[in-house]
Length: 83
Image (cartoon, rainbow, N blue to C red; front, side):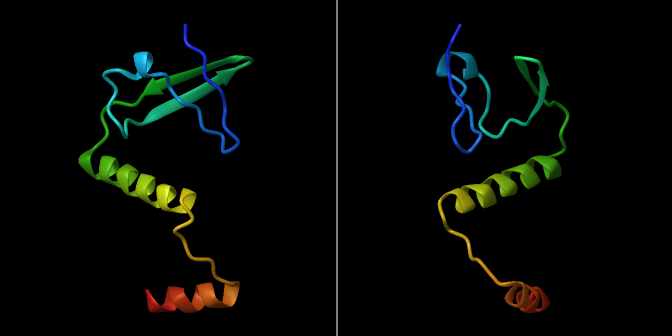
């Protein structure tokens, strides 16, 4: 048995002994029943789905590191028209 804790961002570190053999970027489903939380890896994703997950991970990493831009509503819609 290993012990970990929940961060203020809602993140949980899976201890090294338990995550051995699990690739970085592996998708999981998560289920909670009372005080039991279960992670189950998801098999059968297409390459496109895996790439989308990787891209989302990069985006979230940038957000976590403060590498994002903030816009007012007006600025956002102006930017959206540019895209």
